Length: 388
Figure 1 (cartoon, rainbow, N blue to C red):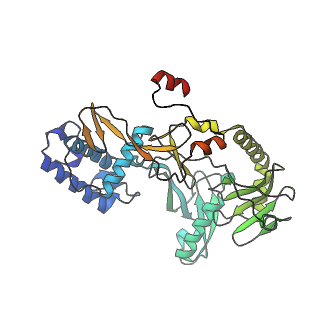
Figure 2: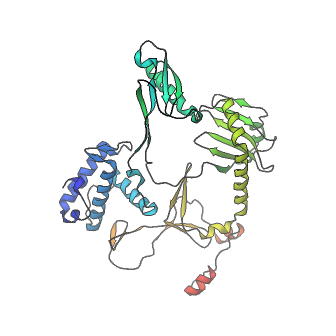
Figure 3: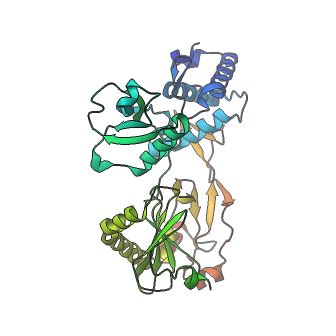
């Protein structure tokens, strides 16, 4: 059977040995081509169709309990995506890239007529001048200087070049490699108070180093928090909790080509909005208490700036986090860890979540303000519900 002809209906007629052959074929194509997340099409198959067809095969092999070359990279990617799709309802990595603007960046001007004679290259970006992107210009400049040894001169025009040109880049939307919930660009991280704090952050006037621009805007005070305002733009702020004021803005020149002038301009435009947001954020945190967390049934894993929600954990009556196994339902059948469950009643709790380094004791929970629920052995379901 050809991969592109596979459907959930006709795969049922394929013998087990052919299912194994198909899986081997999928693995070969994946290892040669689609292991690269940027590969959108290969062997006359789009990335989206390839993964859709493999999911059909994967589900059919599970139903029949047919195993072959288990644990390969393709299986790990697909199993994760099946799980994520069950949560979010969309398989993001399988989506095709979307063309937004063709020839978004082009080479034009005198360079097209006499490429060897000119020292400067006109670079046309199909956008408005007011949307000028210094970070994009910096990256394009690096490419042109490295490959051509010339200096770019940038020009913005939504309609593109008005004479002969050479397209350099298209503007496209590319799907992300995984379905993950993201944190907002603005977040607050509390830092430990240390003896060097006052010395390190005692900047009273703007300073610029090779990597960072520091611009003080508030009173000389003790910094209690580092606030990431925008990870993508490389902007942070040092916050004084007692005074409830921003002490200093930090601009990372490794992330964006910041200058003292552009950093000052950003502060002038955004300062009021940022301070209002931070005040609201801190007020909200202060209003929360430990009781908020007694009733959570989802586990949130923080990976760098990303927040991933797993619907597979539960908390006990004093906040200890327990891991649960996954039950997989497909067309009336139930699977546990890849094996079909014929009959029975299951409560599946695997144990404490491995990443939880500390488990509360009753005494510790009481000291921390978490009131244990009085669910004792021998209580009826109604009594337990009332206690909870």
